[in-house]
Length: 211
Image (tube, rainbow, N blue to C red; front, side):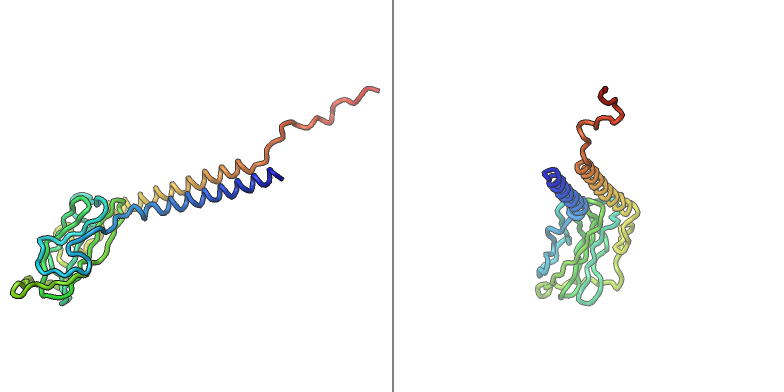
């Protein structure tokens, strides 16, 4: 009876280990993604003066491959539906920036995308309002198409090396989860396997007692 209870407890314990190992293995990649920390302009901020740069800062260094800006973009759209800026981005540590340019007063949206430190892309939007002082309105003209900047074009998809990194990262995490589950399963088998008897039964072919 005691042995049965012990085996049942062992099975429950190993099952818990398997569940935790799988959860950790598959949750860590998501945790490893960079996340938004701050920006210029801030979310829903009202700008009255034009900054030199629009900047988005994340919690960790960004992954820039080859210095081309591939996989990164910053798009600014105005109240007239036009795009503003030259499409160029600069990556510096945890931040990405683009020269600031705005048109008429009104509501704008800054759309950004970066390549996270784990090789995956992260993107979001930042709504803000442009309300310049009287007589300080910008004369910048918007574009009906997304501006581009050489190899780091705004509307270009991430280059092949980024995709390869994504695949490699996924394979590593999945492989780690499989190994963890396999080890836990092996431990389960070893724990619940019946113990061999300490002594083998006596052989039935031994000679009987002399008459």
